[in-house]
Length: 279
Image (tube, rainbow, N blue to C red; front, side, top):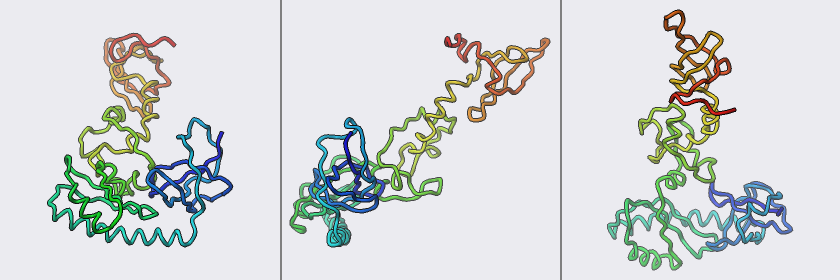
């Protein structure tokens, strides 16, 4: 086990582990740390605790110190400088007639680098743009192309549910989402119904997927042959969440549809006519 604190550098950003050394920073406070991008000021998202060694990405860097009032004032000044840098970058992009959309601008804490995040349909030759920006700001310039999901996370907004984007409010990392999840949850496969504002499949499809997978394992499918207290029958309708099944029974030569709870039936053959798995 190793003692760590969790630090993030953006709202709802990924949490990175650091060695707190002799400090005990509280959650919500700020610390100065050294990262691969240079010296940064980050928010403590997780107070000091013990975690397994295998969950740590080596090397585990120590924090430099808790942030002072001067450090926080510098962060605020950087935020103001970012707005000016964004205006200038937009002018330069228009000047060079580049097919790119500027999404965000970020100063590193020590002002040794300015990062410009953008989206584009393809590759963009921005070498002349970098030269112009470096001439204006007299520091290192990095242009980083991002995807539409990252753009939504940075810009924020409201989803079709009326709540702020999950990615911008609490999701530290994007989870893989597939069309299979929408199918298993019985959702409409209309892209406008299952896609977020970013145009990709909604992140919330992942939230209940484990529960649906468990229900699919224990619920007979449509077309399955089951045994009920009133005889054998074929499942014609399934309500996965309630567990209610409509079963077509053969009674005295007549087809009768009745509803049963999944706990009241026993699977004889699944929906494909195969024998059920051995218990």
